[in-house]
Image 1 (cartoon, helix red, strand yellow):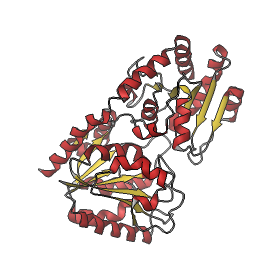
Image 2: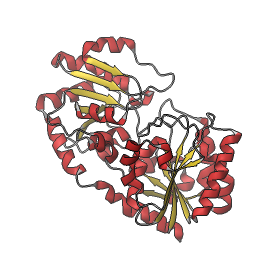
Image 3: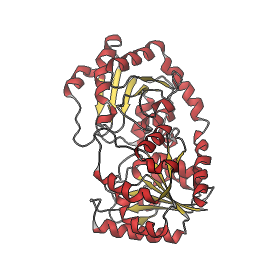
Length: 391
């Protein structure tokens, strides 16, 4: 079976796990979309796209060190190309022409089916080609069936109207996402499949595996309204009443237009460090390893890359009892769940973990689980979806 797997830079940490699981099971051709807005996102940090061809080899895009980190994931695939869109606007004549170059590449690979690891507006120029040649020969992984709070984007409406009728199968990383999708899109409810999600191993390459229990309580990731960072900020003074020397860290880049409360930051005092910027892979792994535990006080959530990055660095998580978190958090084994949008409940949970030392037990349990390479459990679900498309 010949499969073309189309991934975006925004979710590359999970996409490379899928690539690694299926590259020896099918003839796999990989395409990774990269554009000005995504060249420094997720696990990519590409300084410039200038001078690159529309379809670039990995060694043309990545520096030598980064290439070495990625190579084990796609080594064995039939081909790997970065789909480089240099125009800053999503909708442009140049972007349309770039899609025609990619369409010719897709045809040349002889792909029998195409698996999109989510679909974005920059791929809309492929639609005429796909409707002619790949109707019902497409699988789409859905990361977020509905937009997060404060993150509606009209471009995604166009994407869904254009791509969803083409798909034979929709795949999901969590049962919660699959259930939500069926409720929102009942016409497609008979075409879904679950494949699961597991710790994101790429970040282990940057871990120091240092001894010790860590020092901080960490919030990291893209800082957006739905992430509940304001809930975390309000919980900090409550924790400090009990543990006045406890350190806290908030790390990540902000969503455009979203501002943290200066009043809440001031209330946390000197015990809070804010790193509001792009966080490199190496810095991120260090932050997680330096933490006692990670907090995810989200107001809504599907699956969470933050959660699974924390796990791969052997750190437990206190997360809101919302979305797919209950699928991944085993109560008091790898973390614990708290009431949504409740700073007092979050603070009390942090205090309990510090008083009992339970976060140390969480780390030990997570280490055992991660070392079993759990992504292998997803392989039969992905391949089963492919086989169903061949019928």
